[in-house]
Image (cartoon, rainbow, N blue to C red; front, side):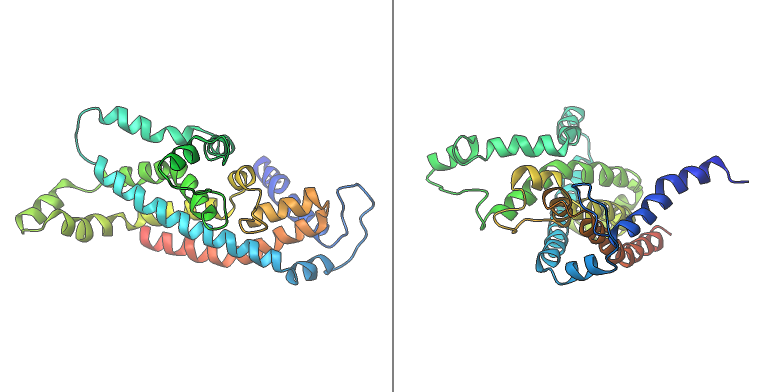
Length: 275
């Protein structure tokens, strides 16, 4: 007899997945016209579309750079806060505030602050003789990664900080007795013991950064041109701007098959390090 949990799993996972495969081989349109069977035409169209490959490349590049920046800054802050000082609780609370803001709202705040004509940041940069548009092709990726980092560094910080609190103080005392300085203690004790924690947080942030949509949609909408079009934004435009639901679904299916082996290897690495 099928348990209620199995019914829920089938309803929430199996049916949408099978339906996605079904839609991907049909000429499904947002207009509601009858969808005719077209076989693998949606897939061949995507596999010959340079914009599809470009969006995957951009998502991978963004995920890699953003994760590296956030890990480095998060580790530094966690080490800095892993001691006793006055008003530590207050500073920790302030540091975690960006996590409480929805990514789209966070992006909207910076869209206003960085606006070329009315933004406070370009205004003061011009006052100092620095004429820079944060959204021109030369700086737009730095801007996007910087804004993403400002919101998600606190996430890395809180997880790494929790990992630091599990490292016995006796290890550092023994290292000091042996003449190790703080830098040596960090690389010989702290970093090796944090590897399982760092693997998990890198995995989570990498996935989230790869599928980024809302921040880019609000700030650049994939521009200039297609320079900052992520794969999630590419699928959105295919589905809701071009109205090609079948091809958008096929892109999602291809992305699933592309990421499955990568995620499998990452999970295997995390489990091995955790063990």
